[in-house]
Image (cartoon, rainbow over all chains, first blue to last red; front, side):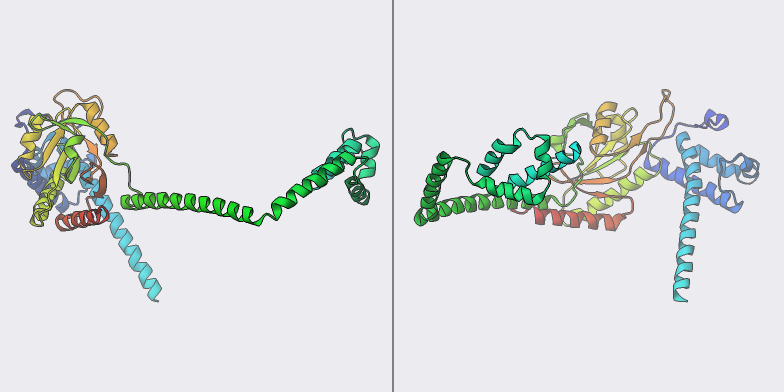
Length: 105
Length: 292
């Protein structure tokens, strides 16, 4: 698990209730939107670290403040797998379309 | 040559086996009991063989055996032409076998009927005894599953996004089904007994449908329960106290009948409406097939 020394130092304990979850998901969406704008898929990739810090540091802080530590890495990993799944799905749809076009010809 | 002879002696034996017992015995006595090398050589000619077996039907100095066979044949003749007796015999055997067949058929029909009610390929999910506790610390066992339809979900309270979503969905289903006066007992079983004490579950479930029962126990009890429902779950190893972690687990709802037996499974692909629809259909089908 990733340890965030600066965040968790003065971070209040995550209360697992509906409000807190909603807050966490909202902050996550804001953070991921920001990543989308700068074309960063994996926030875990060290190559993207500087880019994120430059453009989305506030959003990242907000996200990491509002979510439980275990969730932060989970959501970051999930972003990558979701993106991959989407790609595969798109590829499959494209293949299907191509096949249909071939059949029509 | 010896080998060749042996092969033929086998053929001879096979042929002889089909001839009458009497003749074989006689032939055996005369030639075959201690077959010499010379005998075998002569036997490999088929015509000789037939001749011999034909000849052997003639009793060799056996006035005793002839008398025997004639006496026997007279006795057989009596039975053969005793029509009333054979008809009676036929009726008794026929009637008896008919009776046995009918009984067996009825038995098999009943079994088949029972089997068809179960549905094809019903997996062995649930239905075994378990001993856990609910969010109030009260015992919750397999007995609590009897007499009502239940819907069982496995998850954990520290679950980031899927479990809360699924539990919200469950709440929608319950409300939807209540409109049709369908009552389900919703059961949430934790896969994370180390952190999910009854108190934690109670606090957690406040956010969801009020009728959901939270179930926990010792690690071994939960493991047993998950095994019973074929639920995969894994807690990370070597977790330090106070350290945060997630539990990986399979995501399914299990619809259970009033005998605590499995009816069907509901996956993540179902939404607020299609899930309730599937439950409604499953229960309708269940009631139709279990009507006496």
